[in-house]
Image (cartoon, rainbow, N blue to C red; front, side, top):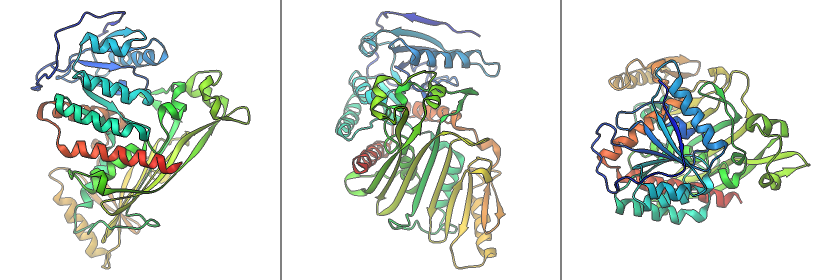
Length: 454
């Protein structure tokens, strides 16, 4: 089924939807997308949802960013397997933000694009009584932290929901690592660690060139300007900080003023040649705004990499984000994670040995025989079988592999649907307070790391 992509220059206002009470009814969510400049905006719509009306209003300046988003949605609408039926009604004009607020065509806006403008989009949307589902990061500069705190206060007062898209909470190896870290018979207690040997380490490796929904990605040129996209310590690190909070202290409200202390941070660049830049963007030359980052007449330095050491409720943590140009043959973005306990370490690896698929290993620390430890591990996994049937334990040299059936490995793109479902549930039931305090703590951590990396 082909859906209509209608480009309009003005929209007739509908009845005001402020303070709408969501009941989980069919098509009660009227979705809008504002200036979609990142493919994550489209991934929210890779699948249909009963609660969301298929008519989506889009507000953006005319150009390749919005066209790329529309092409992505068209691809979902016309695919052979499980096609979607979105109808995109598009307003293109320089006053796109003002028009979205004036026209009142929706009650939820999806934000995924230029991060420099995101706090303005969030603030004005919330002040207009519009619910916001925002791709990470919400902010990329320390100066915006106080405004973000104020926006959460306004959202509470207006009864609207502000939430960021944390897909990695739905990745099964991270889920199982979290589960096992709270099983004392196997893990014991989470160590406090030290600056030299943190209790929790998370490293994420990404690539500028990759495939999304089977197609080679085309990134906008501004993606390579860290003043618009954000440096590594405030961009991808958002996911890592979120996972650490979520895994170590599940559903516990974190007070950033007492529970977080950033100890050190650093940044470094990935160098791109004009050829690399052209392949990823489709452009023959660097835009003028990137000239400040060009060295030796042609090499573009992108400060997309960052490392941070901090404590969370006294637990020493280290995060690292690395961006390469392209993945090795057969490879993809990778995640490495260690949680150190008094009885065992829980390790996620995703390298060549694992065929670049994340796998969870358990390494014994306890002073007992392998047979005794393995028995406890097998019994623990069996106790989780009601929630995760089919998960098994397999010996892997000096460690144990948690063998997870493929049906749980839904992939990164499908995780956006899981976040969207969670958001729709929160619209109806309300969002727990710990989600709000922990979002605030997360962005305090990343922006403080940005400050320290200078």
